[in-house]
Image 1 (tube, helix red, strand yellow):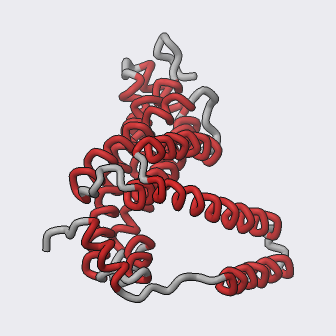
Image 2 (cartoon, rainbow, N blue to C red; image 1 turned 45 degrees about the vertical axis):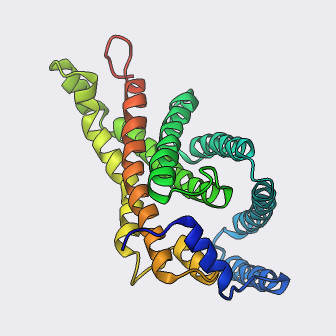
Image 3 (spheres, one colour; image 1 turned 135 degrees about the horizontal axis):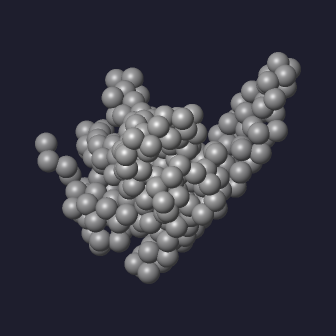
Length: 271
């Protein structure tokens, strides 16, 4: 079946029953987190502070984003959509750098350029070529899909960066030997680059492989709960997951090509 248009899915969603969350649903969720936090404290897992802070941040950030997206949807202005996407991009850069461990300073520009490439490919290919919203900037589609793509890219790139610099440190003696034998910096770094790209792709590929019978991903689940046709929701979810896999690979390769020389001097010596 050819992917249905966004307007068809929206019409289906509004024509059937939806199940909105009221304040008591939020309260029950908070009670569950409080119980889990208490158990963590009793077992001395050291997670109490992080659970409390993460839960509070999640609630505040999601509510704030919900209000912002609702406002943008109501205004239905392409400039507001683009402005919000730019803000999300800068936030993604900051989160990527914060999540990556053991990386050198000065990687903000390569990360920014990589995420920009990923986001532009997503908007041009996934949103405009595959989903084809009307109008092209439809905020109720463009913003959530971009958020999913950026979130996945952030995790993959942070993981790849951490792995690359850790692996280069572990292979320091091998790299010195390869360089002494005449290898180029790329040839010396290639095993670490490939290992990093593979590691960055593992979560995305695992999600793609387990989606369906084992896992009903968030986008499909959300559309079904909102009343959309499950088959249309499944098509949307597949398009997003397949695109995530491809764009994650692109993002990992771009960031590795942009940063691998940071492990070498101008004279092609290991740092």
